[in-house]
Structure formats: C-alpha cells, structure tokens
Length: 171
Image (cartoon, rainbow, N blue to C red):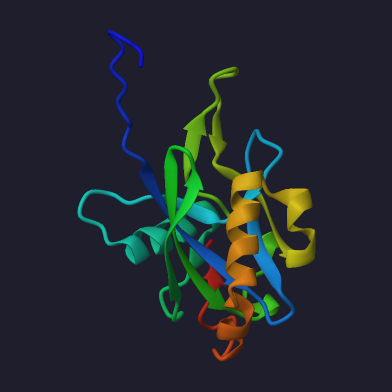
C-alpha cells in the first residue's frame, strides 16, 4: 500500500465509428495524417448526439461519405485503448460503392510543427482483412480480429450489399 498517493481512474472517452466491409472481406480504411497507421472512420459524439449519428457525421467529415441510407449492425461499445472505448457500427457494401480516390476529408487540425491546416485523413483504401496488420495499429487490429472471429463476416453476409446510389463521396 502506498501512503499519501491518491490514484484516480480517468473516464474513458468513447469514439463512434463505421466499419465498411465488402463480400470479399475488404475493409475501408483512412490514413491518419502524420502517422503511419490507417483507421476506420470514427470520432467523438457531440453533446446530445446519438452514437450512430456521430459515426455517420464522422464518415461525412473524414471521407465525404453519406452513409445515411445504409443499415448498420451495432457491434456495441468495445474496449479499444486503455483510455478509449469504440462504439462501432458495421455494414456490408460493394467495393464499387465507395471509390477511395473520390473521398475527401473536410475535417482539419493545425500541425503543431508547421502551423499549417491539415486534413485529419489524407488517403483512403480498401484493404483485405488478411492484410490488416500491415496497416492498422495494434488496438484497431485486435478489435477487428475479435469481431471477425466472432462471426461478423457471416452475419454481414446476410445483408444485401449497398451500391453507389446509397454510398457516395461528396464533393
């Protein structure tokens, strides 16, 4: 026992995100500017915002995607990092429905080194689930591997994949 030391557990933040998967088990990822890792589209909910609404807003801001016509499976609130939880929503889409080259991030941050405004996400790609370890950090990789091991691909296979009419990059 340590005397005079008070430890306090900081509350975990919750990010809300979308996981888009093709029938060929490719996952849509966005490259986080200034890092070596790729990520799902995600971010924190605004005050009073429901988790799915937050996830859809983040998809619009980070990639220009309007995913409002898609039916998502709520995967729940998952342990992500020691200080963060991830409320993840998954859907099956066709690869043609989301063209990475047309995605545009409209959410910016100020680069501390240069003072320049930079987009949160600077590249987008479809990545085979088998190659996730090459792209994602250990926390996201673990979450995705656990979800696939729990039968996510089989559950989503029952969904009708959405087409480019439902998923469209915004200019």
